[in-house]
Length: 250
Image (cartoon, rainbow, N blue to C red):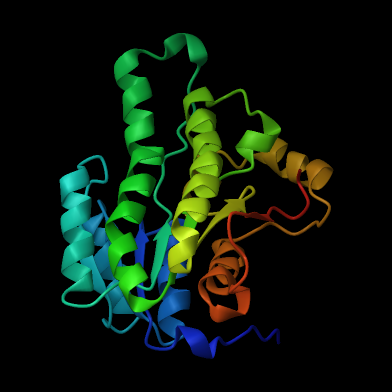
């Protein structure tokens, strides 16, 4: 049986995760809780959120939040922090729906940015002051290997995730004086329930065999364990970097 790392520096830490009800986000919620952290998360799927809370024993804080509403996101962060602060922010939420360049109008473009990019900045802004006062913290932004791939079937999503790389670099430089680390976690094709349902067919399985160096399918737990490392003191001098978990796809 494989054993994975336990991080003493995460015990008792306050961790806030966006999009935590399902997929990669849900795995992050359970992994951080398993490390002894105090975990809060936001999502728009109440049913999945409450099912996750029940499955983990109920010791989680959840707020319904549509991340396109920045004031709601800021309020959820403030409510979870309470009179204290947040030690770790994981900007996980996103939407990778496929779309064609010719079909994009201004409203759709803005909506993609409002889901995949804008909340990452404003969440980081909201936690910065508390992290700085506490002597530091860790922000983990979720990117995607679609940027390196130049994926043709979701140009607005690719653009947003490319901007996340640039944002990570800029925030790492600006926040570094407060000992706040900012890194980009870059998943490959992770086999969430949604990916299996919508896009994993026999042709997709063949692409995995052809593109990945490692033959196994990647699962949300693989990404969550990297998030633990980037949040823990073990990575205390890692900032402004991108950490790829893709089985060697790119």
